Length: 65
Length: 252
Image (cartoon, rainbow over all chains, first blue to last red; front, side, top):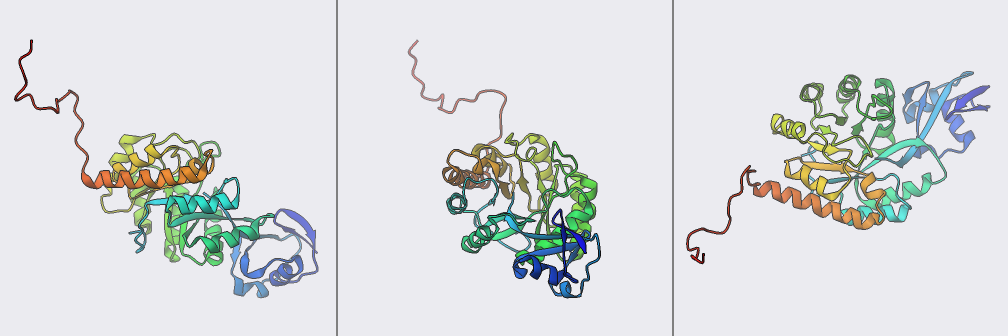
């Protein structure tokens, strides 16, 4: 299916958010996730299914003011 | 003082826009800051290096919601930040205008209410408006962060009288001047007015020598604080000779 990951349209085999992180090579403990604008806590990732066209954000600690 | 945390240094330092991670680390050290602000972004090439730097710095982290324009964006960002950074502290920014970066006070209060109810320790980036300040306190905030001037502008304390009024109106609330500070003297001025701390970023990061500027700000903030505690003399319209007139020679 096609989803939107951090603003890019990608093709993925992943069925859940947890699978997507593994597939895309994110270091799971170092990122925070949101699906369609809602925060998805770490323990809920494996129970969060992905569907076609869903918008996923995977964010990391960065510099800020 | 800040949600039960007492700080030795009254400077909170931003971590963005430094010429290199090494300069950032040295600037944090030189400033004496015990609190640094951080953000959440889509990971770029330098993400791993920044995580290593955070681990080295020993500072308490204050994640921000920079760039958020709606309650929903800010609340989601705060929840994500709490998980990744492992702190309930959040610098809540809900931006109302892209040019001035001034806060949207209505959305700010609403977001603060949601986050305080979820147990966040909210540091709201606000204006010097007293009623907005009161609404933020009612929402559960225990710190207020009025702007000195628009973010990154370096204009200093643009509404001195307004900030003075705010200090007088909230005598027991920790107040942090956040944003718009361009020079150590401006930070000292905020501290002389009785503000509890100053949060700044660009003035240090964009200095020719960020490490030297970080040190200068640390000292200015300390000096301003000590000046406030020692009690400033009242201003006068007229001159008043400091050398005694008594004993003055007649030489005319």
